[in-house]
Amino acid sequence: MKHIVVLGAGTGGMPAAYELRNKLGAGHRITVVNASETFQFVPSNPWVAVGWRKREETTFEIRPRLARKGIEFVGQPVSQIDAAGNKLSFANGEQLSYDYLVITTGPKLAFDEVEGAGPAGHTHSICTIDHAESTWASYQRFLDDPGPVVMGAMPSASCFGPAYEFSFIVNTDLRRRKLRNKVPMTFVTSEPYVGHMGLGGVGDSKSMLESEFRNNDIKWITNAKVTKVEDGVMHVTQLDDHGQVYKEHQLPFKFSMMIPAFKGVDAVASVDGLCNPRGFVLIDAYQRSPKYPNIYAAGVCVAIPPVERTPVPTGAPKTGYMIETMVTAIVENIAAELAGEAPRTKGTWNAICLADMGDTGAAFVALPQIPPRNVNWFKKGKWVHLAKVAFEKYFMHKMKTGNSEPVYEKYVLKALGIERLEK
Image (cartoon, rainbow, N blue to C red; front, side, top):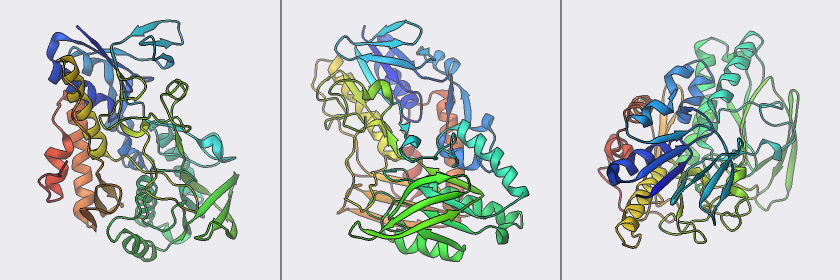
């Protein structure tokens, strides 16, 4: 019997545990380790932050769900990974040995890279359920005394979709409340142009999102390097396409949500030879660490190079379909190793995203993620908003019941009119 430990119980870790149990059966031990006892569906956080969802609709207790599948659970943060000795250490002094380690921790939120940023400073976040609830509390106070709003993404950010989503969701919410006329909105982003998304653009994303901003009276600043945030003022250096200073901005705001840059979590980033300088796990074509072949990784915690160099640094996103295929590849490769075979399954670096825009939505497909592409389109419509609502319900049901079927292959691709994507 081998012991497989999954470190992280998010949208990568929970499916990984379920798929491992389904693939390996009861003959091997599986343990999930997570800093919190609660699963949170992060894509719903923009809705939580404007009061369209409650915590209980987007979270659930992990332990009893895993127990039904015969999967063990440790609900505390890891303080150290001994990759050479194959064990994890916890703050209380306990240790957990493993034969295989699957890292799906997600990122560390690097608010500290911009002075005054983040929930401890002067901008809000939707990256966790706690942050989203704090944002909702502040947003309610803002509704009583509305004024300028600044949304967007900090330098080195790699997750731009939620910034666009939240901007349009707040825009819709304010219109419904008859307050939009009192709220000047500015979108500030490190992207070289609107709709870049860390992907070099997808289809007609640039012109479509610019059109949506114009139609909704949202101003924008691109190539924007946020240098400091003070109470009510964001300091932004705007660069030109050559990386030279074009303009300095001091943007007043009464409410702001900015997506931070990501880094690897401390316990993972500190392992010698496991990660790149930002703390993201280095992997080969089979999701394995080149230095520690019994360590696999999937999701936001893995190292993926930027699609292209930009005047202000931007990273490449790891979208849901990509994460799903990474997880499946890991499960297949661990199963192959346990059978005495060499790993042979690869994840697909294809980007698929459903982005809500309040009362409409946008969907994009980039196949592969890095251009030139075989499939490259971006479409908008109310159907995307409805599809994301349905996807939320389906994914939460899957996580609660332990369904190991791939969500994107079974649901999202069909919703987009795509039966399959080539590997």
